[in-house]
Amino acid sequence: MDAKAEKIALFRFGVIAGLVLEPLPRGELTRRAQEIAARHFDIPASQRTSISVDTLLDWALRYRNGGFEALAPQPRQDRGQPRTITPQLADLIERLKRENPHRTGTTLLRELALSSGQHTAGISASTLYRFLKQHGLSERQLLAPPAHKKFEAEHSNQIWQSDMLYGPYVQRPGGGKMQALLHAILDDASRLIPHAQFYASQGLDACLDCLRQAVAARGAAIRLYMDNAKIYRSPQLARIAASIGMLIVHTPPYQPEGRGKIERFFRSCREQFLNNLDRKQTLSLEELNDRLWVWLDVYHRTEHSALGTTPLLRWQRDIEHIRQLPPATDFRRLFFHRLDRVVRRDCTFLLQNRFYEAPPHLAGETIEARFDPLDPAVVEIYFQGQPEGVARLVDPVVNGRLPSAKASKAAAPEPTGINFVDLLIQKKDEEEPPW
Image (cartoon, one colour):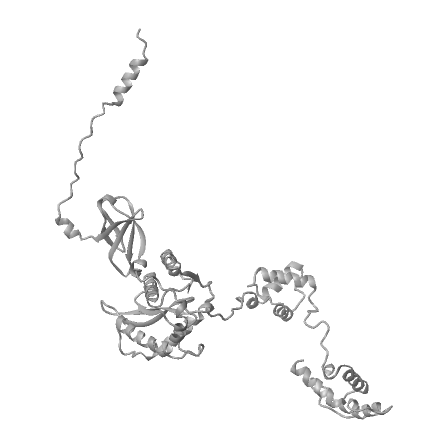
């Protein structure tokens, strides 16, 4: 019973209370009903001011049989059912709308009119819009994303979330300014930040460096929940994650709700850290990161409203579930990029717009270069899965001063005595008859 129906039922009960609350002798019920009918009332949801005797007796009978609920106005039997839309027309409208949810009501009315061969569709625009809304056929209802449920990992390092935030402008090493970008990883269960750092780029190199430091500091997660951007679908990232034993899970397109926790962290970072920086002072990237890590230490030791404890204590509670990589693991080499390169005839190959030298016997071969993208000073060469040493950065000036390497002459092979033309002549002589 809604508020309007309840108000009407209360009014009716107040009117007939003298007829139903006590037993009445024969004829007294009708006499009292006539007295009530002679009065004037302010009837809810009606412009009438009087009530007939028959109506009063009907209300009294309904109350005795069904109680207070029976005094509420009864809804129509066909309530919610369009009386001007036939079942065949309703089916056609539903098929048209589901076929193209972007069809507007005006377009639907025109299509219905043209398909029926009449000048009008036979229904009004308000009737059509009401029908679409009642049956969940409006554009918003048809294109609405599925409902999301609130989730949380059971243990720390079970799920990590990673994302990027545009930060303030900092000093460029060569002069001028550049925008810093914050790469951060958040533990889903504890809201702890395994690592966060401002970088000069938003590319894969910065993402992998952030992940490397997170794994080195807090162990390896089981799943890493990331955006659907191109850099996060890199085969380099997939290979490195598989080597660590971490599954990469991508957010479905246009559904950022799954990364709500790290988005909430970014909001706290803006409100508590970025908004309190001195805007008159332009920091370097190193100075900005030093300030960030000081604030993160405070964040980890402050009680989180959703946890009832601090992120650090919540993470430490599951310390026995944390999976650490073996102590002998070389994190830097584990996160090396691996790219195939063709060695030129001059024994060089191009990597990140710089030339490196490879051993001479690899000229013309396809090698695998393994290197740290943030520090490409050391490039390891692998050929057919076997190490072939370290590539040296080409210095053309030094190479121009060195004498050219001369190929050593191999010893002459022992003659075989076989000559193609002599063999043909010999074969011809054998085949010709002696006469």
